[in-house]
Image (cartoon, rainbow, N blue to C red; front, side, top):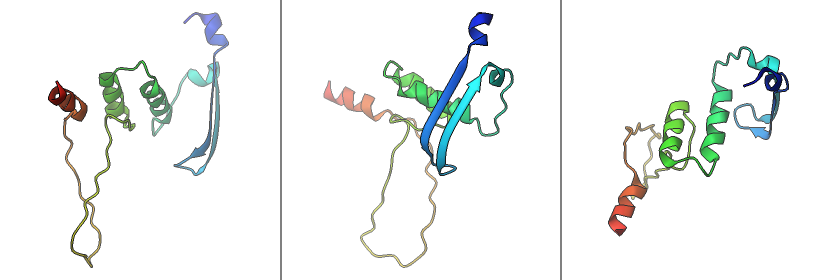
Length: 114
């Protein structure tokens, strides 16, 4: 990037609700903000990854790669599973860890259609 463009560089991010802090967000960055950026939770990188994932031109493989690398959900890497019991259970709920699987449902469905 040419120096004259970097001198004019600014970035603004605004959101009405941040689920982590439960407040609105209004971030402004200038060229001085980009000299050194230290983030304990990689929030800026996660925002950038999410923005890239949301672009319509981003390929499915790129979306999956960004989602996994920056731990940002997208339609290709997230799902909700609900297990319903026929019998009422009077015990405490328990957390169940689900192992990661590599399965492209849409790809398999497309193969079945063809």
